[in-house]
Amino acid sequence: MGVTARFFCDSCGREVPRNKVRCPGCGRFFSSVKCPKCGFEGEAVLFQKGCPSCGYLRAGRKAPGYGNLESGGPSRIVLKILTILFSLIVLVLLIILLRVF
View 1: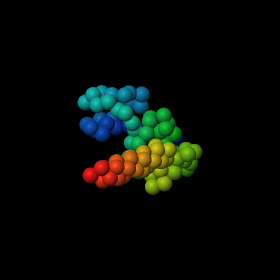
View 2: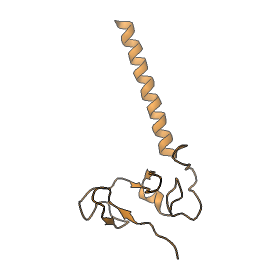
View 3: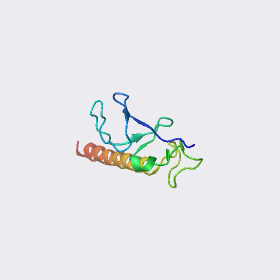
View 4: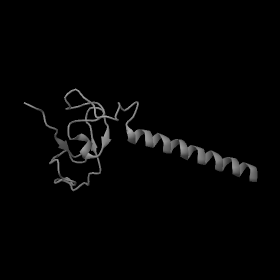
């Protein structure tokens, strides 16, 4: 007997069918799915066989390309790169402003 994933609205707590994009209770739009164990967020397709990050409801395996949240999956890596790029742009702008004044 396998365990199947159940989905709940973060806003009102009502159980939501897997294929819905809006909560039938409060109407909230879902842009991602969040693992209740580790907090990993991503598209619903990533959670078809359980959490790709921590393996919650998965048969002892992790999806390829995903580590735990500390090491990060692809979306975490992109976020880190964007944060570094933004910091460098701000630094360059500050240097330019200091030279002007």
